[in-house]
Length: 148
Image 1: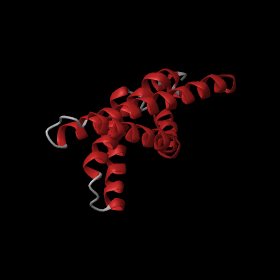
Image 2: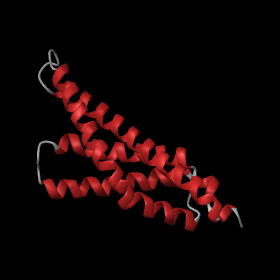
Image 3: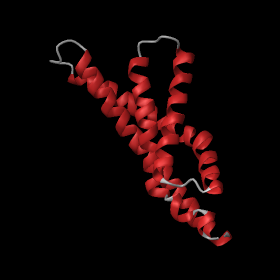
Image 4: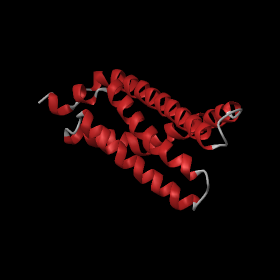
């Protein structure tokens, strides 16, 4: 078990990086599409849409690693201990945790116009990031329950 720790640590770091990259891409895509579809007739707003998408991706780049450390790693350790390492379980838990984070943002920001954009970014980005983490870390192949 001890000799596998450096390899598992490297996979976890790579999985966090993959999850963050996926969350940034999803935040960019949702923000770009939202602004392009809702502002005016859509003509001449591509530069604004691009700027909003880049800002959303940048904010996600700063926020998601911290969220992974605060919520993702404890849930990862819990899933390894309990044997809940299936991809569907990860997607479901990722969606639930993302919804809880979106609700917390909704309460904290209190009716800001950016909530129309932020909530879908959090929910979709969090779920996508969780699946990317699962694909890279593959906890179903490194669970202690498999060694028994």
